[in-house]
Length: 393
Image (cartoon, rainbow, N blue to C red; front, side, top):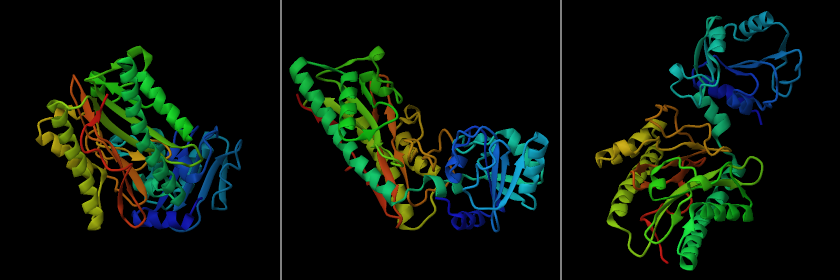
């Protein structure tokens, strides 16, 4: 639902004169979500929300009613490109500081959805373009009560999926001496189906060196057996199979045997300490009402691994926003791949998932962190993993 008063209050809080939403053929998912516009539209549209006053619409003659569901009686219908350019000037007339889905130097490509040419056009009318990143969060990445409940339900089931997977591994090894990665993957997917969960892609099941590949693709082409003495990483993500549900996303590691070798335990403890440092950073900030940006949590987490001498083996950002897509559109926990200076706000969720990836094996420990409406920090999916899980056969 589109809440004009709340959006305009946020625009004023950001010190902007307005927010210019724009899309062409579904390229700007963020604008679509905020405006409630379907990506099937074939022509360019603009919707200008001023800090105060009535919004203005710009649509093509082929699709004249495409923004009629939004507030604002002022609508310009264009046919020629010259009319479009002149009309954009009319939309932003008098505005100096305008928010768009733009990131300076494309420092944050998750926000930079507006093409350079359109930015040039808007600037030609005397406007300064600023990022709408924090605005997007408030009206795209935050969860309502129903979505919050869907996450906690999915989180509980995802936690159970690990128990199912580890027990399946134990049973298969007892019966057959080994089990293939893809068989474990299939067992998890069956559990998802049985419990009415859906996912955009299958989980990662990686044994030995495969666990050292952060984005390993479990498939028949690379299938390896899990057997006694194997180290295994499982990364799974899913959401309830219902409209507007949001994801849960977790990673755990295990060893097949009675006693976990010291080399696995030592690396796991470093990763777990880094994870906990990230969680602690978030908890401290919200307990003291201190503004917190995504890169800060990445720094708190990454520093632990760097100080242990494994910084070069932690090759990705610490975490990502979670929403209706597993990689959502809010603040990412990133000071490595990008410097995400968006604020972490209430009613948003993100992963904290540090890892150390060596040639013979890799360890990642992933949890989800959700900030509720009161500012309480929830680490979802059950108790974070405290030691390498032992699969006894």
